[in-house]
Amino acid sequence: MERTRITYRIVPEDAGLRLGELAARLAGAAGAVAAARGGTWLDGRRVSDADALAPAGTTLTLCFPPADGYAEITITAEDLAYEDAWLIAVHKRAGWYVGATPWDARGNVLAALGRYLGSRDGVAPPLHLAHQLDRDTSGLLLVSKAPAMNAALQDAFARGEVAKTYLGLCAGRPAWNAMDLRTGHGRAAGGRWRIYPLEAVGQALPEGGGRVREAHSSFRVGRPLDDATLVIAVPHTGRTHQIRLHLAHIGHPLLGDTRYGGPASYAGQRLPGHLLHAAELCLRHPVTGVMLALASPTPPLFETLLR
Image (cartoon, rainbow, N blue to C red; front, side, top):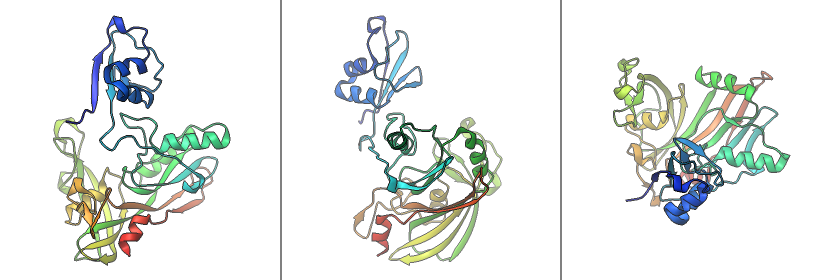
């Protein structure tokens, strides 16, 4: 079985050791790398400094990456879709985490963007994600460069004032050209996200997980393929995995989305993950009031399959 973490109660004999050294004693080279990449936690709080001292009496947790290892991300000027004094938008690639994971504080878009801006400008501004994209979803990711922007951006996304358009390659050929779908959304008893009936909106979720919320998406067919379809999706609410869940719910899961029943390969090609692309993002600038209309080009894998 793949080891994902080690938990260790730090004893007085360990006092004075650096976390990186203690991690190496517990897990060898893998422990040293975990400490260097921010995979060390003391009493549930991340400690990204491998040279920090190990305090006796605390619980050290070492988190290790999945089988595919650590993500290595480098941001360049070509990855930027937009930038001004307050905002920056990135052409996120499939396979990139947007923020820190329990095992890694370095291999994500936010950290890589900070390194790029720090190298370019001498100092990196305080960066904050305006919204989220799944690891395998590519496309436009909007980031705040000024803390004063955060509340306004989050409110705009929460109120549905940001128009988002996605492209997805889904399994099968829908019998409709356009569909508007409203459902309930929330976690199941096991913790995974799932669809609930619309009538369940407002009801309590199992295990104290809050309440069922409404999820609203619109879909239209962009182009039929061989036993697959390019769909254009517009999420009117911003629920976790919303487009993926809605497409699976109507019998057309995304290609590569094995978590929700999608095929792992298409046209003889093994797929690295679900095929969803955040293609367009339109919002009113929180400072200037100007309408921003941002676009991200279709990824090469989409182009290959569409041909």
